[in-house]
Amino acid sequence: MPHPFAGKPLCRLAEIEDGEGRGFVLGSGADQLLIFVVRQGAAAHAYRNSCPHQGTPLDWGGFSGEGRFVSADSGNLLCATHGAEFRIEDGFCLWGPCAGYSLQAAEISRDPDGLLRFQGLRPPPPGPGGGPSR
Image 1 (cartoon, helix red, strand yellow):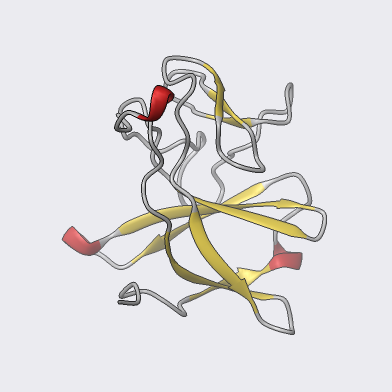
Image 2: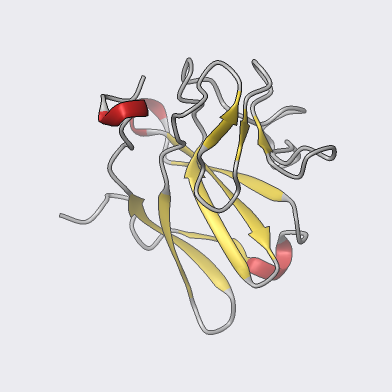
């Protein structure tokens, strides 16, 4: 069954600075979903904006589209709450209170004109050792 927000337009890839991310709010109320997209050259990586440690959003500096997701020091995704760092390519936590866990990936598509569209969420990743994620 497709996600209720499948096909929702986000932005064009060119609107995200290379090496940076942009947050999006899909829906409202109880159905609200926070995601973000990070650009690496021609690639776009998308995740649910929820740290596996406590479920808080990763970005710092506000979620009005101006929040930041990528550490200027390491180039990794950075959780503003506890400083956990995640690989951009797969969302795997390299350091912090959720080390060994991963962010939940969001599926996106790209139209021929570069418009990114949300398509759904991948299943929550297992925690270290194959156990349930936090």
